[in-house]
Image (cartoon, rainbow, N blue to C red; front, side, top):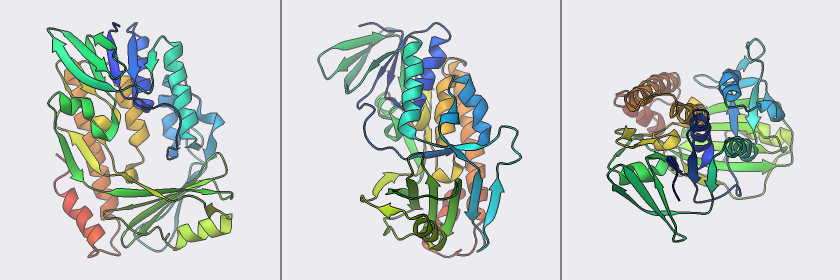
Length: 335
């Protein structure tokens, strides 16, 4: 099989890249190890995401509206940041699987070919032609490769790029069933990390602890109160996922580039993981390789400055290992 561009990996970055290419008359094939089944953490998007979503032809309005953010950070007081005066209206709490299905459906409707439950077993190059050998015995030839393999950066590392880890964090994620709460996102700092909680469209609550070592899933007071008052119940064991900050030493090369978490992955405190996945995907059809690298570099520097300022704003546990570690990371993550 021959395709102009092969995208290895799935998810929102891959779909956005396929759409961006299709709009310029460039066909692509997405090759995914999995499919649309399985649990994925929810995502809260701010109102400012609306123009980006509209550029993809996606309406978020069939997801759960988010009315604002609440935080206990830097003091015991709770700060309320409503979206009432945003020119874009409310934000959204997403059903991630439904959101990603809508994105891939748009890409396929635009002419993208999609291969699911398929692994790339080897990658070779002959002059300007890439050949991907697949685990079903078939092969795909293409002129350009895109790495959308997430935090593993599998393809880019295979092609010689190096993944640089700036901070190692763990997110312990749980989905609590059967309750009801207000439509805000809550962030609560604690001595050994910080807690995130947000309602999901299916009457569940996504709860996450971000820490630097495995910790018991014992929510802090505000998060605990939200769970109890909302009538939520933990019916499945939490799972741990990588939540650290990392990036490739180069996000593109001769005949390839990396997008989304494969190019750079963010601490969840930034709330920009999904937005960056979509924006890097869209950039694939809009920029040259040098301009794309500059875009990635600029995005990373802005993220590092924001993250540094965010953690500097919490001083109640200045000598606790978690917060001391974040200060140490800030000193070398802005380059």
